[in-house]
Image (cartoon, rainbow, N blue to C red; front, side, top):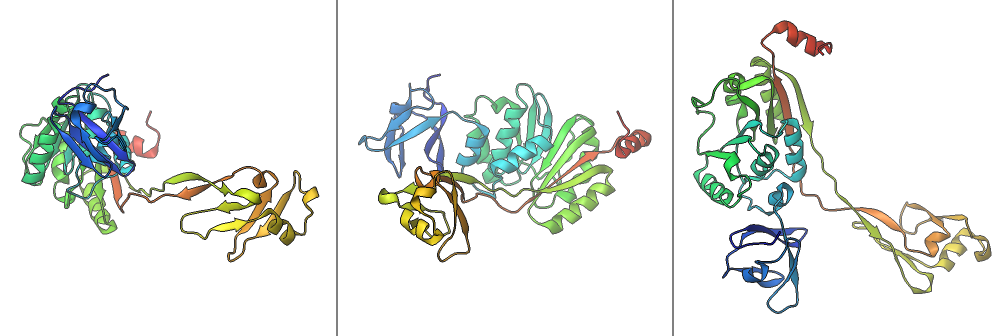
Length: 338
């Protein structure tokens, strides 16, 4: 599929630098890689490599996706990262044609993922009380032609909103990412379908205690709180230098450079006898006990290295609306409901 004028695309500079851009024939993109012309992008295929005006550096042009949108949107609030967003979509049962209420539009990252999940006929009702954020996100979403008809924006304080335009028992899920969610829990009970789900994101454990108490008082059950801890890893190759030198680098650790002769001398092993054997060596200046095999001395080896993680402390509390029939609800809680 070729890229056309007025399309919104993801400009990929590197893993930490992505930008959402609406293409205009006379437009220009300026970043650390150089100056790039929109007209050089229009007509190309997604994934194409685009060079700057000096033909020295390049960027990639990618098609929008929920994870790329989350990385590229301008951050006006504390953002939910990809691992938070994906888990929220799972907990909220965000499936095609569902109707979901979201309070706290913020940057719009979660909104985009939810809207993509409920296509083709589902609806996301998203509330934002801050006028500046509301106007900016709504304008941004006008360029998202694939989902713009599935999202309804409200510039309202959901705590004081009366929901008169909503019928009881028509909402599949509610997602709250706001400062005081316990102040509006009561009004969602009638809006939700039976056994439907409410998900609340909170940054502090003290707030979790408060929201759990409020959920229990308003006939929500099966309350569970999750803490997501993200760790990213990459595979790096241990470099081998000439003359049998082995060099292993790991971020946050010392550099270890060894020669084959050093290893053999310390291990009291003759070079002629090491084939298919292992050599145990205590590394200098560390408490690390390393095992070398014969192949380690001949070919590059690999190790895991922890990357810098984009994350923040937060808790996801999920609960379900109790059934009106107390006997049926009791069967479910006892695990005997089919």
